[in-house]
Image: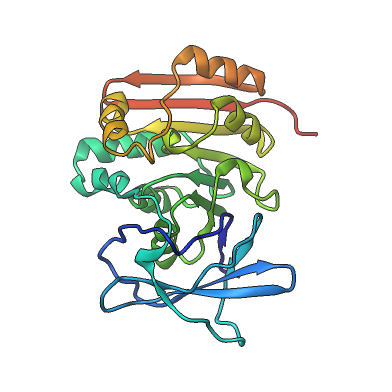
Length: 275
């Protein structure tokens, strides 16, 4: 079944800035809690690009992308009334589409050494990165994890076979994986200590699995993003010493590290036998 899974609940009291791009078809999302459920629908709108039904608030909700429920839909509210951080700056880099930027993205993707049989997870990425990943490195299974439901909805519309999960990478359900490759495309948006993130992912990687941490525009761009988007960019890129310590504590080897002014790439390889 095609799936868009949601970890965190939504509140209809705050606003976001949806991208001015309508979906070509409605997207139905079913939030589950025990035997109860509530259907959410992404649908084209005249005034706003999306509409969504009120969320079912739970502390640990599970949700799935599905066909419409027979129980009908409750009253619809505009997408602008939902909590949604603005990650559009991640795609603004992709819109430039310079050869240099494309080359950096290809370098990040190649760092994963993805095979057709690979199971891959991508966390906090741009749509453009998923586009290139889908085109350049076909794999058995691709899971995209993101805080933004809007970003996931747009990705899901383009790539029906891609699994999408809304929430934090350290809480991804165990039913997915173990992973051959994990991309942390935008680590500074993750509100956890590096040690906690690497520790959680060490339980989700196969022996020899790769963890790729990147920023295609490096620390120079990150400094500007921290000033412009402080609610989204909540941490920094780790230096070599910090990364080596976190890696060693959780059975990873740091096999490549590039920390240039305009490009950041770290490749970790998991060496612990999961058995």
